Length: 74
Image 1 (cartoon, helix red, strand yellow):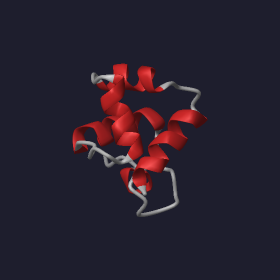
Image 2: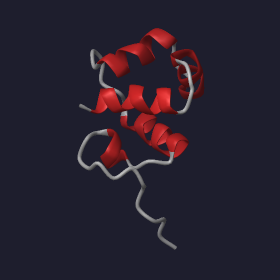
Image 3: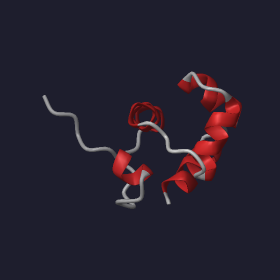
Image 4: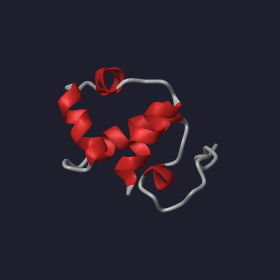
């Protein structure tokens, strides 16, 4: 599920839960619940994380295994 990818991306980028929570503007405990899947992550925060990690939201939510986002339209 997508929350496992949240944790994997964070670890792959050598970030702590506290660092990501600060970036998102939420408490570490709230972010921890996003990773554990006990709380749904809002779409605006998914967008922010996808830009931070440079991956598609489709990848983050498990629709695809392709990390790269779609090309930006002109």
